[in-house]
Amino acid sequence: MVATKVREINENKGGSQAKGKTSFQIEKDTLLDALLFCAKIVPRVASIPLLSCIKLDIQKDTLFVTAMDVEQSALQFLKINNVGGVNGSYLLPAKEGIDLVKKMPAGEITFNQNDNMVEITYGSRGKAQLVVLSAEEYPALPKPAEVQFVSTPIETLRKGALASRFASTDDKRPTLTAVFIYSDQGQLAFMGTDSHRVYRHISKVKIDDPARFHNAMIPAVRFKSIVDSLKSEKVDLAIDQQTSHVVLRDQNVIYFGRMLDGTYPELSKFFVKKDEGPAVTVSRGELDDTLNRMLSLDGVDNNRVTLEVNEDSEFTIHSRSQKGEICEGFPDAKVDEGFPTIKFNARYLKEALLVGDREVKTATLRVMGVTYPGYIEFDGDQSVCVVVNQVR
Image 1 (cartoon, rainbow, N blue to C red):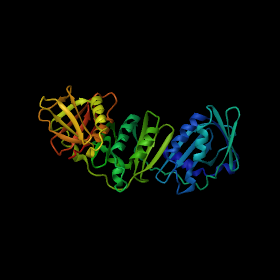
Image 2 (image 1 turned 135 degrees about the vertical axis):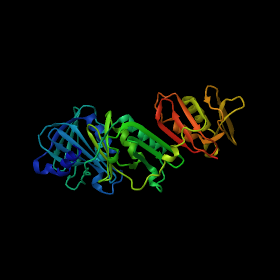
Image 3 (image 1 turned 90 degrees about the vertical axis):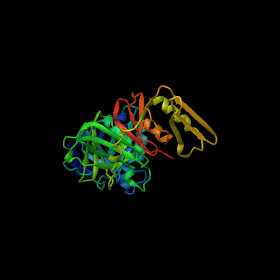
Image 4 (image 1 turned 90 degrees about the horizontal axis):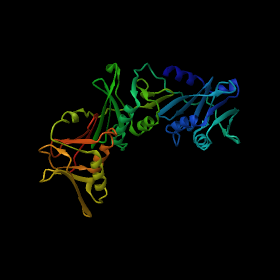
């Protein structure tokens, strides 16, 4: 289906001039949703001027909406009332088109093409015109090969996209700016790291043929932005090695995100001993509140906080700077004997607490000793593990 739709759109270039003037009607909110999705793809400054436009293809009772950048592209299909019964295509200026539709009143709007202009009527008295361009030279969408799609609940993709919070923002290390998508013993998995901490989510989604499933790196910020915009409960995911794209497909969107080149660091070794060493299990909400207060202290190197068990066998966290000190205890925490005195970056710990399912009430931190990484997991959500290095 993906290859067929892409082929049809790639072959329909500039057809409106040959076949007549297009005219269609669509609900404003339906079109706006599609255009806002396009806004995540159309470049703010386009190296190829045509990419600052959105391509509209009218084919029978379907409007195909294409947005493209050099690194990603998407094809959406919407139901319309093809008033004139004419097929065709043209390029709508993205910025002006999105801003205009966004400010229109709710209800049906009509697009009437007239040579190099499109007239848009809306409400009971509104009328606007925008200059449009020929679609003849608009770049073609990627042509996907026969790939293996994995049907994935949207919540799984969203949890996988949380790896973006732990990916690096340093473009000098491009592989670390990615979300890594891979197979973990036949289950769909996601990972992100900035070398100080690692996020891993191993989902329950089975990959039918793991031998055919290729690993992929996709820019983390871009991946999360697109996943957050998808509305279907299930999304098909594929790794297309032939075109070097991650492909996402739901009921009315096909998205192509170009993969990063390179080799993702081998991080599985960090998880081998995640179940070894003493642990503390603490209220997730209480720990979050404590860390938030400690981050209010100025002048603390690396946002350092100290975790330890006091002389009364109570788990405590404290932070100190030249301007003050905060110490808080957790009398309800469950702490194993031999839990060491250790130091972590408070911001890293706080961010780690945000990735478990919302209904999870407690978090467990396990560590083998000083200088060893800490492993954070969530009661009732064993699919997620965050590794955080200690600070000195």
